[in-house]
Image (cartoon, rainbow, N blue to C red; front, side, top):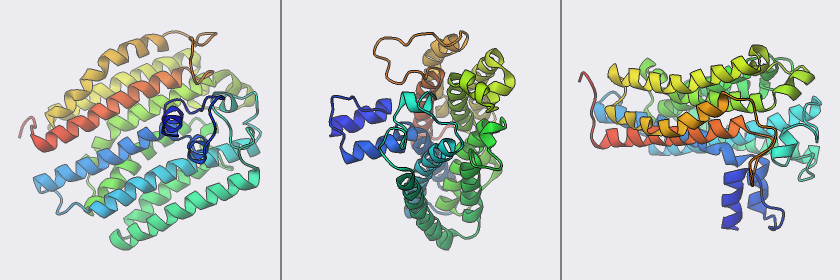
Length: 337
């Protein structure tokens, strides 16, 4: 079963010759294969909090609240994926021919859940998240409602009417806000009971990376989204300009990190992210070309292409960012200090 879980976390699927266990089934349903991005945001928030305590910028590090925040973020990501599947199915976007049902099983279209079962799953996961939110509110006050409320609002109306942010070219910027200022800033706040503009600024580099992943996903669905009248940012910009814009975002991540290190806002060890540049170069090259007509041999998530490239780069660069923050706790080195 552990082998099954690892395969699901790596590919979003389970090979047809392997028996489906309960854990693998739910890992597929909530699309846990992309949870590493959420875990990374939570860890960045916690590491920034630890650095603040070390320098005296914050008075304490609340371990319980940090753990609850990270669990809450992962549950929120699961709920978001389930909500997206439900409303896209209700709105006629998700069909057996649409990319969502081809790269991984759709909860309802695959027969894993009924619509009623999907609704119950959404309520259950959100209910657990509400309980965590209540505990954090009692411990830390009204700012918790602001962080959690904004996150829930964007999560629901990403696909739900009447806003449907994804349909109006705002989905990518919504993800930028959630995985950056809201997740990282919110985790920092409940861990230290403080929030500062430098922390919000430090959340932006990783937010840029997560935005490239969604850009890649919407590039993969460009033709079908355009045909359905779904105006994602790539549809608004155009196919080639959107690929170029995504390349710019990827490079911008490194520019912002280097700039923040030179300004003394981040420790020198965060430059560890530069080790991801060898992975970046072939990704940039791939984004310079249209999506291939056929997948490479044994490629697990076709028809997705650009999103996989962006995700692999984001995962590596994000882990290196975390590694740099950890090293800076051990041996703090700042320019200009």
